[in-house]
Image (cartoon, rainbow, N blue to C red; front, side, top):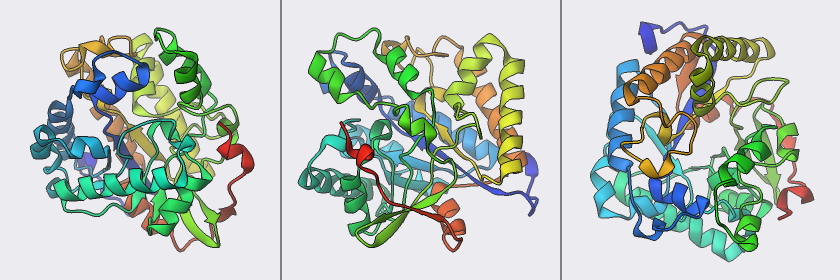
Length: 331
């Protein structure tokens, strides 16, 4: 573990990376040229595996099926599991309006991603995260029916609608396209959801939900991209904020599930199209140094494992049962 720390008394926590590719960012943003499937998978995997290995950290990679189906990504993606990491399903087409799909469309979307990811990694996925944190009762039904062990699509953050407005402010999308993206990064209602794990009960069967952790009580993001954005204004403030949130998690008994994004490891050289994102102007070496600093701090406070191992460790606990509400499926 990072820093050589293997204290048995550290609470469990998990670390994951949504491996959204360049084309996926462009697609959601409505940028022309995404159909050509421009990719930064190779530098992403190369940098992330190097830095995670240096820290002794194993994580869950949520992979998009369409990327696993492309020959130019095979060498990079096939290196993930042999490096000790877990892979999970992040849909096939990476459309944040997944909650609008019919049951048949969802079945095809999820199974097609399973097949593509397995063909590259040799692993059949049993964990899922919806693109843009999209989730619906119909999605949960498909996951339960297909034997999934966990979903990790919920982001209980009050900042989601503000992040969506920031993301969309430079787009030229039609009203219908904007409507498709109306739940991107979550809704105000999502900000009130629990940050503790629970079980969804669907059709008499259950699946564990492991939310992406936000600051206890405040529901402000704590994921890596948010820390990097804060660090652009004040590295000391970002560091202090992260320490405070990790301490709060320990006080309230939440084992945090920390989220990474590709842009945490990449710079404008890798994705000049995404210069509007916060911290993309930060020099690549400095950005990755800060990511390593924050991950080292994370591992000092918690025993960090992939999401699937986190879920397995809490699966015998008396988790709260939750039934999907009608509001969850409103578009």
